[in-house]
Amino acid sequence: MLLSLFCGISLLGANPNVVIIYVDDMGYGDASCLNPQSKFKTPNIDRLAKEGMSFTDGHSSDTVCSPSRYGLLTGRYSWRTKMKRGVMGAEGECLIADERMTLASFLRDNGYTTAMVGKWHLGMDFPGTKGNRDWSKPTVDMPLDKGFEYFWGLPASMNYGVLAWFEGRMAKVPPTLFTRKKSNHIANDDYRIAPPYQAKPLKPNDLEVASDFIDIECLDRFTEQAIKWLDGQASASRNGKPFMLYLSYTSPHKPVIPLKRFRGKGGAGAYGDFMMETDWHVGRVLDCIDKNKLTDNTVVVFTSDNGPESTWRRRIEEYNHHSNGIYREGKRSIYEGGHRVPFLIRWPNNVKASSKWDSPVCQTDFLATFADILGKKLPENAGEDSVSFYKALIGQNAPQRFAMIHHSMRGRYAVREGKWKLIMESGSKDSKRELYDLSVDPGELSNLIVKYPDVAERLKKSITEIIQNGRTTSGRAQKNDTKFWSDLHWMSDPD
Image 1 (cartoon, rainbow, N blue to C red):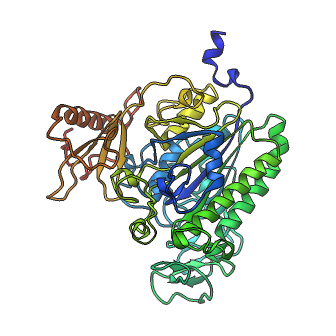
Image 2 (cartoon, rainbow, N blue to C red):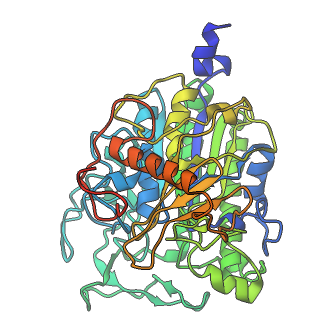
Image 3 (cartoon, rainbow, N blue to C red):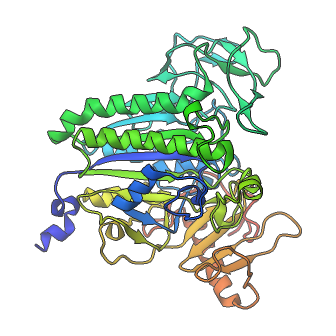
């Protein structure tokens, strides 16, 4: 019995399958299970909460797309890399270095079949240059080089291009045409990527696009491909070969383009309808898992890369729908609405139905958690900011997480420890440190920096050490990918 306590999954049976459903720009208040006042229903997302665990204090590792995806897959904060602000385009050196362990490579090396379907947005190396491509050559420095054995999807968000349906390293139909954002009659102040397309670029920022690409088909194509892949893995899984699927949707990120069957069904305009469609696709994936009799030992994770797009303000005014729930601001912001996101996990064999965990967890924590599930130890140069919440997941007493770092699109930092959150100063002359007690002030309305200077000083020491040491977790210090950078306004280069 004592030995089994140290053998992870030996207590629980066969290694579980893993399905991570990652949505794009969904706020905490866009799940009806988390927001009783929501103006639309998300029954399939709610089903995950009912049949699994809701992490009510769950966070993306950043407040925009690329850095959050880096954190999810590597267990390391992206601001430790060369990218300190913003997001990537479709093309560029992949943010995940070749030697960096990812959740996919870890699971692959431990006997899993791994796949990704959907939006990547961490950089790819396409053959040639814009306007001078050789699409008969393979794309490199992409998901197949980062631990995934199968890839079907898009390189990045639709406002960046390159827009084509990729399978493996090749575009099914090469993106040899060009386009730009077009008006969207479905949603106000939005855009479309839809034919007709032109043969040559008319402006330097025109997007490369394949002749068969239409924006409104993304969710359906991703879901169909995910189901096809899951069906293909079912028999092997039942015979002891587990799988990992990372399904990365493009919704409810712009363009907001719900299918006709969903339009007018919700109470928050086209955005609400688009969320209802997203929920329907989630249900299709869950139904596939059920049909293949894989439900009990499949870990399904549902979460979002950051808080809601700035259109959340208009939804409050027009529909009284709060995409950010009770939290302050949304996407790009250092405040809670920017990074507190839906964070749901279902694993019927080992996770109590309708359970909740109210302590902080971060998407960087998945790598350490799955290592715990498999009874494996991560090397010191992997998952530096990954803290296992495995015990919490299976209903055991779990220690409080080490301090967590939040990071905004424009490079502002905050540190979270227990109930306290300290927001550091930015480069603006009017910017000052802010301290909040989230246990009584989740909306971050009352700055307590003057009242609790000792708490602020302790948290400042925590964030400084986490940056200096190249890791959150205990172990040998690791190097950040760059030397001192200018956003660390409370530190100096000698630090």
